[in-house]
Image (cartoon, rainbow, N blue to C red):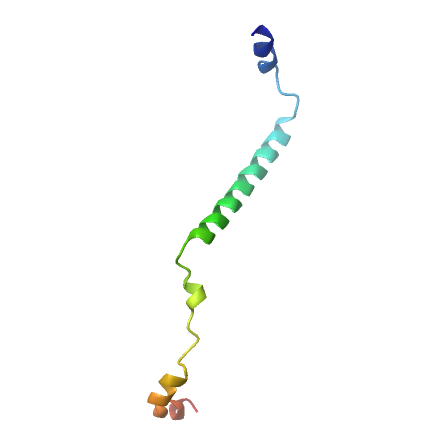
Length: 70
């Protein structure tokens, strides 16, 4: 038990700048992973159903609209 406490109480040998960079990198990777998982599991994606304009059936019902644009 004394040996475990002695090992745990030793100061870290790595510089604090390296620890800071490592923790920032891990936090960034965690944020990236979390965003990707949220995007994959979110059922609402309006960009997948984006309408690009009136289709052929609408044009068939509104022939005067084609003349206005020309």
